Length: 309
Image 1 (cartoon, rainbow, N blue to C red):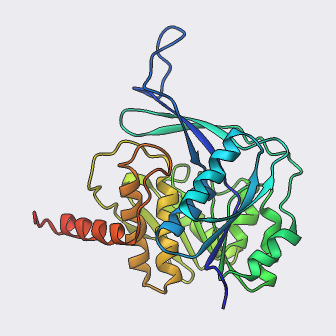
Image 2 (cartoon, rainbow, N blue to C red; image 1 turned 45 degrees about the horizontal axis):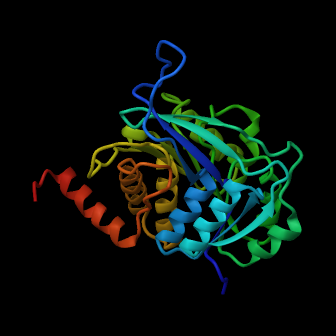
């Protein structure tokens, strides 16, 4: 029996959030904004903490710097009880500056500071891979060499391609080397059938999920003629921040999938978790736990049925 259910590799960092009225530059050269805050963030962090909070035995591996941001990350994981293996990042901890408008929409400036030749050492990753059931590989250059390691150990792999256009070769290893593929619909509206078919035909994916915000999601299984659309679930509270919504979807979906729940239940869990994340300020500051997810699923089911109770 493995010690953990999931190993997440890559994607630890810090977000600096700046709240603005609109995602456009106002006239002049400065503007007053609400207090600017730093949050432990980025996609691997969101998936790892999300899984851990939902009760999945999770371990996390990444590079972090010996700097203020790295200490912020390590302190957060220690407080949460998340198992973490941190290697020294030669250029420091990755950061991004995210503008968030009054409707909760965001735009991120990611610094991508890891050196181009940085890679995750196989001798560090292999023992962790052997001690889990499933591996989630963040789309980052320093992670891409671990697909053969996971396959050699017989582990299933998931990834999130984020805003991939369906064609750029930078995501090929991830798109065609993963058993579960998540991606944003932002750049492929109207091409969901084409892109999901390409991922399945050229790779090993069993499931491809296109997360599409307020439009819900599109899900294609290997063998399907076309992706199936699932409408979004109504949020139970006002939308204030879209940071971390995709990671919340992925963590809830994976939790259900690892527990062999039906696909429709995994999709519903992902949609509900994503909707919940929209109601919290910060990137991954308010994570949904298992009782909370059950409660939000009941509220969403009631709202969809039109029952005021």
